[in-house]
Image 1 (cartoon, one colour):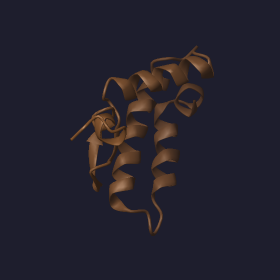
Image 2 (image 1 turned 90 degrees about the horizontal axis):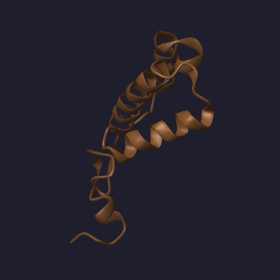
Image 3 (image 1 turned 180 degrees about the vertical axis):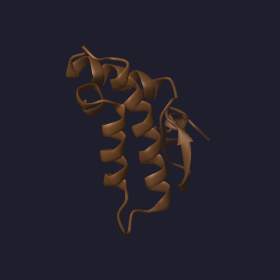
Image 4 (image 1 turned 135 degrees about the vertical axis):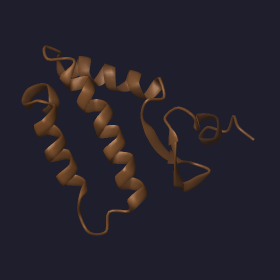
Length: 93
């Protein structure tokens, strides 16, 4: 929403600053910065989108494996979104 309303560059400055604090675990910071970058592009490319439409686009990004998440098998590793669902929900081995 920030990228849509204020532009990608200002949204990135705000988002990066939000992640830059003492005690922020490096893997979580890397995950957040990556995911923020993906959604900044969504906002930049969707100037007239409603908040609901932006939410749908973000869910689609997750479904399409464009975002990263903490790997359920090893919480210090990042995995592309939707790649660990079988493990999390009992379908994996």
